[in-house]
Image (cartoon, rainbow, N blue to C red; front, side, top):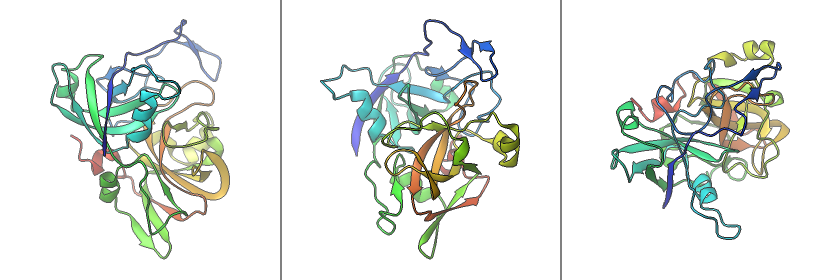
Length: 283
């Protein structure tokens, strides 16, 4: 367990505020960063007038890199879902929250706090995270199953079942790898996420993806995330929905990997209550 530090990031835009939707419309929408007051874990991840919105508080480490060594990479690699976060500056100093996800590209860590705490915060407030979980091995299943981005404490709260040599994992949705988009091509899955494309209405309806929520555990079939994110028939990966739906081609609700098996040793079981809000008892 190590301490890592980040501060609440400012919301950001490129020089032009427009994004171009997959159907060719120029739009200006709220997006990543800052403090999002009205979006939390357990809320719908679909249907907002927003793009890539992150629930709760988004943090980043802006300390200067030393050569190729980046403090923000340290923050994003070491923290795991379920890690304790403590505010160490500002009016909310001393308040505690919990890591609920990581968002690639912008390289943010996403933290849940109660609304009364969010109201006391400002952009730039510092937070210390007790980072714990990176490097964890499930000794009974390794190397058939790789774990990442999830704390041992959170994993122990999930009702897993060992059936023969497989691990049953409760998920709210099963997603085919064929519709996964932005985030493919990374050479590791220890930070960031990748997106569920929502542009094919038949597929969305078939898999019930219109009911995705922030914090949902989902299974991605035929997806191996052991050493990056690739298509592999029979593989299964489990992840957490960390950011909202998006209008840009190739993008959609973001999923952060927590378990993956190239051999299909993870068996997803539908359980609509399989959400961070329930496991972490967030109010």
